Length: 65
Image 1 (cartoon, one colour):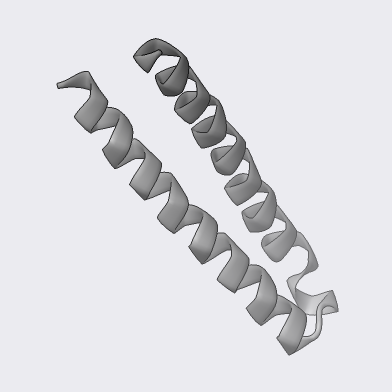
Image 2 (tube, rainbow, N blue to C red; image 1 turned 135 degrees about the vertical axis):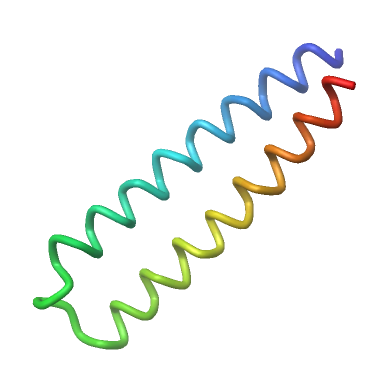
């Protein structure tokens, strides 16, 4: 059971890291073409994703103990 849970967490972590990179790429490439509101929404989404990544990394580290 614990191994399955850990694998699910690693899969979620991978998805979140890809999502974070996508946000970063979109922000860099479309920054001048986006409204300020859209840029703020994108930045907020990236920051939230990065928080989730940090939390999942912490959980996975605890599971390794």
